[in-house]
Image (cartoon, rainbow, N blue to C red; front, side, top):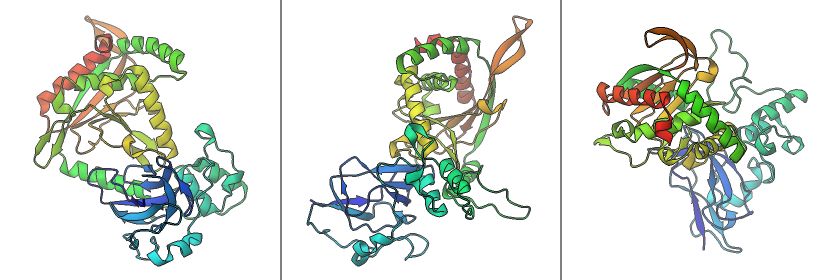
Length: 411
């Protein structure tokens, strides 16, 4: 039985998705659950799995096409089976002939599609696009990413070694790889960069932000972290981070302050059934926020493993739809960049985001005497429509107490 492949809704309020690449070629056998195509949203490039078994047929969306959510873009058919209906041309939102293939020309035009690399080659979406732009043969590259995956930097290095002429800056080129814009010139932004700018501007101008700041004594946090880090490394062979511990603590405090885990909706305040902590991550084109679902019910080992997986996928541009949806609260940590303190912009419809600064020794008063303590500065940004100043202050105070004595929250 024919199975339709439609442009999925990967986010709330999403109207369109951009086809970045097809992981399978037309006429190729596909199994249910296999990576089928990559779609770009305003948050990340995500892999979309095949909804069924069959031969990929009647592909109607070229790479780069912007397709309305719910529109059929291909069919999965049994041998000898024909598509049940003609596939309508996909609307790209730019030029009607730039991203779609007419139903009568689907098979004839497939050879003109930019072919993705062979399925056995692990390559990020950005690297694949760069390879086409620079005419780099990816079959000759050895990737530097996880599991030998080819990253954008590998392609750029190969292009440079071959003396290839770099094209004009595009969405696929990392900020480090782009030439510096001259005075008076406009630096083009990729899709993720433009949409991130639009979303943050919308949040800043429509969400009534207010900020609460506290310094936290992190001596207890470090003591517990040193013990847990050893346990996690022995059990799973990976290194836990302070961010993992902060995720666990913040999630448990959120369970006692449900208004801070709520969301703003047109009809009022929506109380979320789960505590799903998103973590802001810098990628080539901006910032994405992978989500750790049910973080309040996860131990440090589970959080460390899951966060590491999400970070690797985010850096490689391979986040799954479930990785970036459902967040109810966000943590943004710039401590690794030696930032002492900063304020962060809320991610609607969430009620708050916690900005975490650098952990460092400071001279503070302890029992009336000067002492050196490892300190963190936390700044909570809150949507005043969801939580008032008193609620935000009580929540942040309890986060500080959890950092001071984490054993009470983790045991």
